[in-house]
Length: 336
Image (tube, rainbow, N blue to C red; front, side):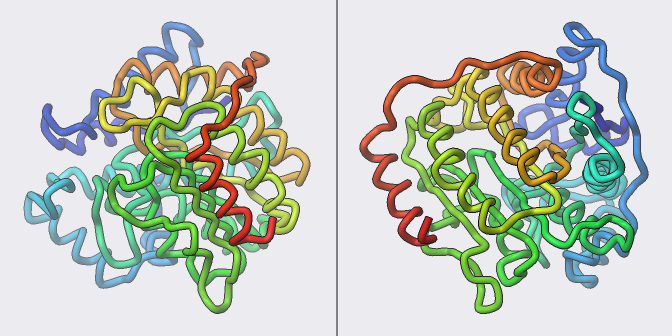
């Protein structure tokens, strides 16, 4: 894999007790350097035009002014300092780098992964929330579609973060050229992502939500990909595949009740790669959440190992009855 990273992302100072802090990136880089010796690309900060392609211009002005004034508490979870503006542009730019690097010729071993912060999938068209200011994956997916020479007409964003990406859904809810699929913990922040949220009037059945019960793990996540995401992609046929890669569904993450293992993330990666390959869709990863430093760094390392030739073990137990009912409801809602 190729990894994107910029030092300025560390300067988004949320404080040592905030779960989304700079130690997350330090842990990832330390683990990758110790076990894999990877190199990093810096990319370029996202342009104002790229940000405003998915965010309201007045909102972007408000974020810039908020940071220029020294930052502070935007809401109970979302804080900023002066340097947050540059970090947010860098994180969105890294996501754009990942998608454009994928389009411009990634082969299997060079699939790009951007490890910027602040994360993005909760950032709505005109609102910051949930640690997020700009929606990095959405900026990148839209940039791919808007770039004249990209060959991308249709993009999919698959969000495996434990929280529903309300921002990504908000941005693309009525876009027929972007498919948003999310597997998340039922009842967790921000409380969105119901099965029947399936897309706006101009984009029916382009939003796929699976709110699984707490305790779901490798088997349930694999079933979602095999039984729902895969056939949905057969119908949609994407030109670019973006993973909003949060690792807070890990069984050792401190803020969720899900039970995905490090090996389970490897299996998810392998299955996603197979789906993307079948559609000749370049594949890119964009970091979202993950708040246990060891589980986060190990899981990112596992994704890398899969692209370096590791064959992860597939789960072999049955899906729980509660999760099975949710997956069945999703299948019915989308006629899959």
